[in-house]
Image 1 (cartoon, helix red, strand yellow):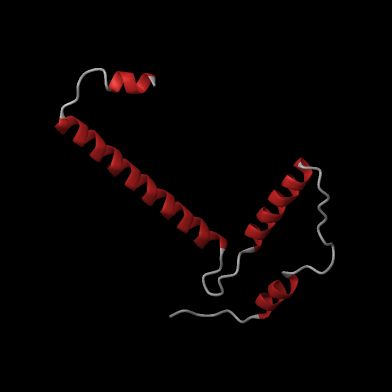
Image 2: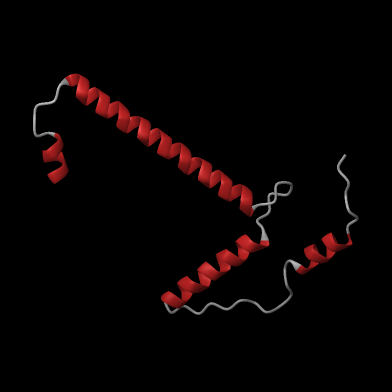
Amino acid sequence: MMILRRIFRKPLRATVLLARTEAALRSKRMNDLLIAEHERALEMSSTDSVTGIHSRAYMEELLSAAAAAARRYNIRFDRDDGPRPFAAINEHTAEMPAMCVA
């Protein structure tokens, strides 16, 4: 309320009010664009561009966040110590011949 009293202390002219409103809208649009670009950059950095599959680092981060939430709420959270899901993929890519891009 204090801010509104300071802004609206004097009667506003229509031109001043219009200018302030347009400035606020421009600022909102720019903020929305920045948020959208940030989300797009995060998506690009966490997924493979060819397959669209999330990266191993993303999955580990997701698992660690889930484990932290489980600890916070005293919920049992066990990771399966069975076969590693990325082992086959890592072994397959190690055997692939190097691709040359001309």
